[in-house]
Image (cartoon, rainbow, N blue to C red; front, side):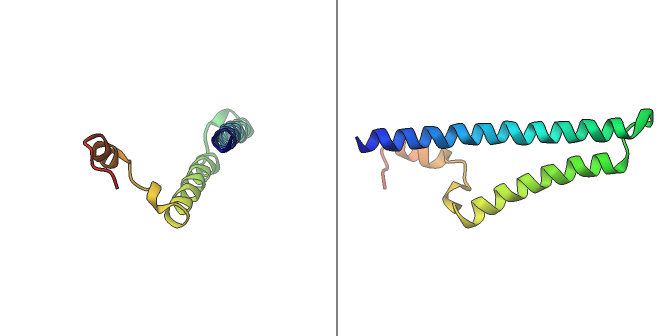
Length: 91
C-alpha cells in the first residue's frame, strides 16, 4: 500500500512539473511574440533579445541553485553509478 502511495505521489509531481514547464514556455513565447510585434516591422531590438536571454538565464539559475543547495547528489549524470551497479558493485 505504501508503494502505491509513493508511486501516485511521484506521478502527481511529474505531471505538475510537466504542466509548469508548458506554462512557462507558453509565457516566454507569448511575451517574445508581443515584443517582436511591438517593435514594428524594423525587427528585433535589444530589449527583445534581452528578455529572451534573461528569461532563459533565470530559469537555468533556479535549476542550478536547486541542484547545488537542495540536491547535490543530482549534479552528476548517474552513468558511472549505473555502470557500477550493473557490474555488481552495490553500496
